[in-house]
Length: 113
Image 1 (tube, rainbow, N blue to C red):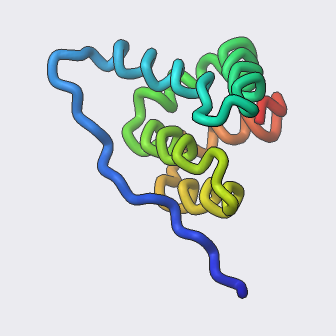
Image 2 (cartoon, rainbow, N blue to C red; image 1 turned 45 degrees about the horizontal axis):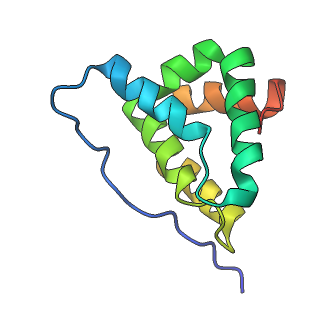
């Protein structure tokens, strides 16, 4: 009916006592996990591709609050009937230059996603 599903809204969590590096590693690890068992291989392949081909962009992304929030938001879309629309909604909510650089590498240049 022409309506676009909105992405879930959430605030970037704060993790007292953890360094940015620890948070970045946790976010990077989350890219390799998927809530649906059927998607596990895809998630692992995406994570491996990102770590191999988009290291700089991934590092910038997980240390940038908007980009990290985008990654977390996209994870909440996995397995939903409106998964693609949800992911687009996440991108719309959290767009900035770092997100653009990460997407250019992961989607356009290296085809990880």
